[in-house]
Image (spheres, rainbow, N blue to C red):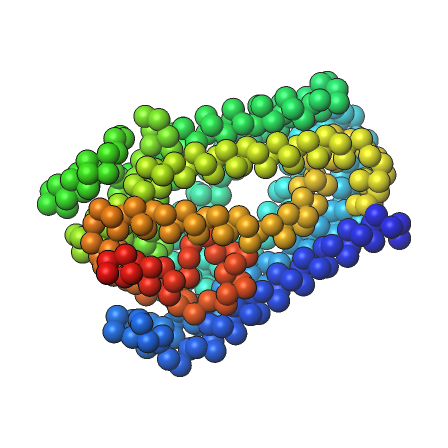
Length: 414
């Protein structure tokens, strides 16, 4: 096996082993504290709920471990196993070339990967989530979501991919710069359009119907200096009993979205607190900062791909003998996550910092205890483990661990 290919196999093996090790640590952390609720949560979280969270974490980790191994197997089959080369040769033999060839090769590989992962997705939704009382997705809704997702990929993803492939064929050595400009413009338009035109295709969004709660919400919105198309309640209960809230969009289409399951479980002051936290993300420009970071990362990534796409060793590392723009995209999509996996703690830490900042923003405008109580309710109802492994958390958790987050809020109150 050539040295570049050996390097790829070694990196894939190292990342896969590290991911499995982190999952194992998380499982031990959850199950190791299963018998006793952490002291600071004992008054609000029953032992049965704490044990459910540990068991739910265990079940999800088992599925995640299979997913990690499946991803590694697919990467090997597509690259050194000859999958990419075979699909490419097969379609070339039927007269395809240029951009149409690239679109078809990528479509075949993407759909094949999705089909391989479909049984695991079904097991996660209809077995694991159902076992713990979270799943409300029907088979009809699941299939409808699949069809809608495919339609979006064809309507939005295919044209973008076609433009990038065309630039790789026609724009010379600086193709990546033009591709980055196209991608960034596409991302901005998509971020603007998502709340008003895409999200409603999957869920229903309604203004708050409770007059008293709406008055409280409007007061918080005004106090935080926020103007938008409104605060919306999403019918998250159609798919799951998990509760959540999020901020999305920008410009005239920015929205605060509260799940109906969250509204059902939280008291009025707790809804206010969660809303203030989401408004904090807007006022502190977190969405804009994340977009700019994504733009910088994609700029660096495409510049790297622009260089690698002309290097024979890049293709050789993945066992591909026929260089092409679409082969470069496929190989980069496999190799880049392996190389950047080690930066995950930095990205996660930045996200957790934003959550702390949004908490502090909320605590300065509402009762911090209300936000703390709301979070504990969500931890309990969503079966979130209160005892995550610190190393696992540093790699994967976009939100701070429960203990640190609640402690900071109570300190802010004091």
